[in-house]
Length: 104
Image 1 (spheres, rainbow, N blue to C red):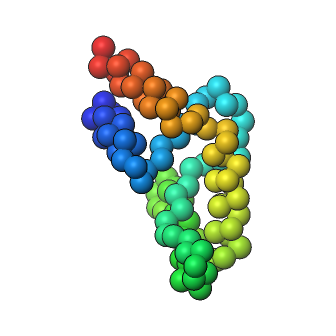
Image 2: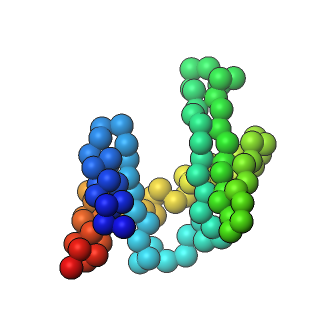
């Protein structure tokens, strides 16, 4: 896990990657029912070229959702999560702390 945290920390230093940690202290949140990943992109200049899929990993299989209504609901959930999460600087501190704790 230490190597994963080191990789995450290194990736977060890239100018085109934002890493935000949602700490336990944030309490209940919009993704309390489970984790998900939004794959794809939004193209504001050409909305018809925007493509996104939601991936939900379950115990025995994964589920891909590509219906616009489903994707929109998960994008809304993500939009609610971002302000609850720590900013990038605080997130990097949390990652460094976890890495240090696991290295001891």
